[in-house]
Image 1 (cartoon, rainbow, N blue to C red):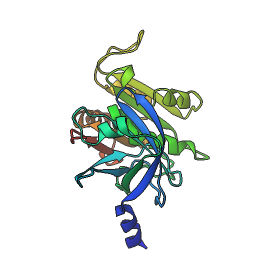
Image 2 (cartoon, rainbow, N blue to C red):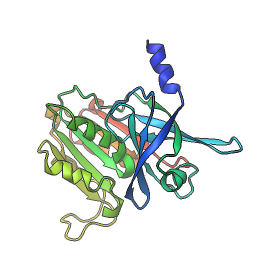
Image 3 (cartoon, one colour):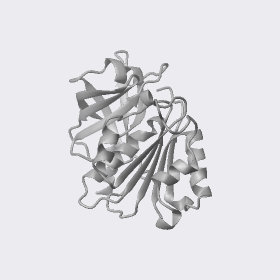
Length: 250
């Protein structure tokens, strides 16, 4: 049974694009119907492969943005100017198109939905994507644990899920959200633009004695800085899970 599960994750499947959502000027969410999808856990990712007519292929990994939902899957892709895969996914791909993918991939940076511990999510840029899967999965639980989200972005126009996150927080007292802008803030924003701070992390999270589960995702420098602030505040390094990304050719 275990071997069959592993082989299932390694199998390339042909999905069909059912819808597209433009998240920002450079990012798009792709909604897929994936026959035979084995299911995923919040925080995992999927591999996407494009194959040209001459047989040349390129593949990239993208975090899954959706909660587990049968054979429906959502990927949010940030376009890289010199990328091989992301420009096609964010520009050419259209509803009805096929898309090859396999997965789910990854078993460490995942949130287990049965855990009652409070959760702090810390996102830098498109690092919000796997954390959004956790937020969405939490919403389907009868007794969800409290969640805190700290989301750092360059400017308001770069924020993914810009309408959904505030809407969820507005109707859910158990989800508190703090934004940090590094380059440009909204008009009247009370905090100057700058890097994430210990104060912002503390305002959205919980003291170390509450033993929260912490997930940090973003560019390498951001992840290292955020994790360092959390450890300095007294959080157990063993309860801090990190996932980082950098230039990959897109």
